[in-house]
Length: 134
Image (cartoon, rainbow, N blue to C red):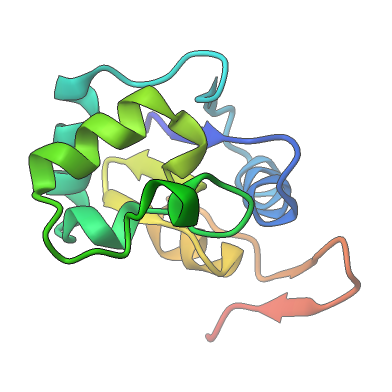
């Protein structure tokens, strides 16, 4: 099974998600989306695959979200996508795609449902232990 993660190495949640994928025996395709942003078509496909609204993929913290006024409900989906393409830091992360689906993995343990052989337990960077229900 192919596993792809849209990753930001500066993000703890993204690092934990990637570590869980690797601990599960997968060798994921890692796309550092700030260096290699998705195309418009790829971004729309990811949003559709996750079955979420465009706004659900917007990241507020540490981004130009507020200064751009993206909290205004008047922004159309197309305009929000344009903002994410112009400022990839606005794309929330990590997004993981596998044969089982696509998901924004916040919290990081949401990735476990997407993996073929998920680890039974995992210790995050902050020491929190995540156990997969039997």
